[in-house]
Length: 295
Image (cartoon, rainbow, N blue to C red):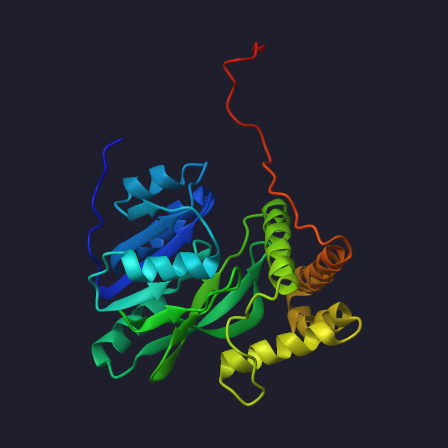
């Protein structure tokens, strides 16, 4: 396969992603960034699918490193990747920049005067947009960011002036429910282990702190409430308004609350047994030459 080089786009931004078996997303996200990002980097956790092939074909700079946790992997990315662009953007492979967001970020970089830039991330579920948007920090002056040292649900931390652009970053989530359930099983296990072993949160929870600190405070409070998964369903269904998305909105609210229930069950199991889950390998591998093979 002939490797190509990424052609710098109009935005002075280095886009950074971490991946594991993201071939189903990578073709589309590369096309989404083409002509816009100055440079694109990937830290891959030894994917088994075509992630590496697709990245190299599009000229993306890719390195591989064993995964030890999201916070650790992002910390490595910020410290070791040869970023030359004046601004850096965190992007997940299941996210796409709208044209309005591309224009807004370019305008913000031309204006300057900020250390971090928050965007409006719109949620999708079952390939349908939901009436949910969250303000999330995703762009910063290169070198001005660090990541919370957590196993899962990592967050960028930028000191200084944070501005917000009101344009959408589309969070497409999983391509189908089969993928979604598999991903949530892994994430809920990681969160249960982190909680059971006293792992730190993204930031210390504070009721009167910044947006992230308030979010962590609410998350801590919700965990302590009885039947919190029922409250979470009502939060998404009524407060966030997923009812406006019809049956897809109902299913999304129900499943998100179920994830909290499963996480609580997994933590309870850890408290009962004191045994952490074993790492498992799912799906077939390659034939073993020591064993006779049959079609």
